[in-house]
Length: 160
Image 1 (cartoon, one colour):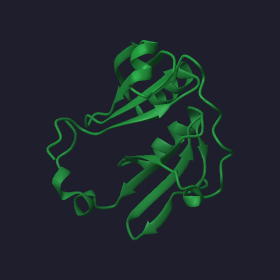
Image 2: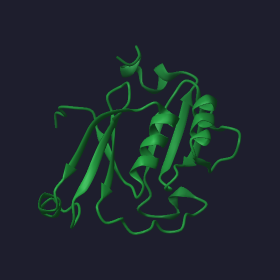
Image 3: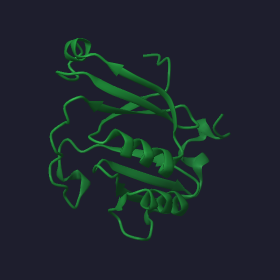
């Protein structure tokens, strides 16, 4: 497979303005597109019975998060568990950064709830992480590597 663009992830949201504010404030993502898909097209595409709005946010590396807000609010999320892997459908976003503490502080200030506590967790030598939930309960992982070249030598050189 030859991909023609960086991977994108979609998140269904109930309060689009609040979630836009969160991802822009917490992670500095920029809005690159804002589209409303009519009900007929949304239904045929198996996304929603009614219309939905999709706002694409982009990182400096070019990855995108799509916030999708259906006309009819989606069902409430199941009650959260203490451990991410307690649910078979568990998924989360990962941001790899060089300033984990600062990013976590911004995310918490923007409305995130920490899952892993006030201090980053060193899961193996030189690899630190924190997990949090965004204001609607989506799980976000923030990771910092002491040596990013060891983790991803193919990407060393920085974002465009």
